Length: 232
Image (tube, rainbow, N blue to C red; front, side, top):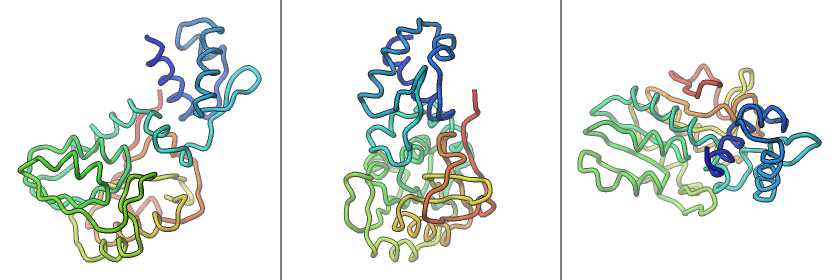
C-alpha cells in the first residue's frame, strides 16, 4: 500500500470509529509505529484529525471543508453508490440531492431514459452529455463552498415538481432523532425534496451515523431505503 492510499485508509478508519490508536493502526496497516505517527502528523497538519496521546481523534466530519470531506471514506462512498445504482428505476424521474455520495450514485445511472432534477452543478455537468437524460437544474444562487444551488427561491422551486425517486445525502443520522442537517436552508431544501418524492433513498457512509445536528430533516422511517457501507 503506497503512502497516499495508506493515509486515505487512516482517514476512513477514523471517520468510522472516531478514535484510533497508533498500535492498532500499525497492526492493521502492517507498518511501523513511527510510520503511523508520521502519517498522523501529516493528516493533522492537513486538518483531517487531532492527535492525542498514543493516537488521534476525528474532527467534526460534517463541518469539515468540502475538499477535505471528499477524501473521507471514498471507497465506502463508491460501495454505497454501487448498491444504490442497482435500485434506480429506468424511465423515471429522479431528484439527486447535492453531495459526493449522491454524485457517485448519479455517475452509475444505468441506460435511460431518465429525467434528472438536481441542485448540484457537479451532477448536472457530469450528466450533461448523456443523450438518454433530460436534465433539469433547480435555479438559485451558486454556493461555491457547498457546491450547490442555494436560495430561498430554490426551496420553492423544488416544490413545483413531482418525482418518482429521491436520492438524498445527509450530514448526520441517528436512530432516534433521524436525519438532521447543519444548516437551516439545507434542512428546508431536503424536506421539500422529500415532500415531492414518491420513493425516498438515503445514501450515507458510516461517518454520518450516530451523529446529531441542529436542524431536523426527517425520521428514518420516511425513507424506503437507507443505504450505507458495511463496517470492516
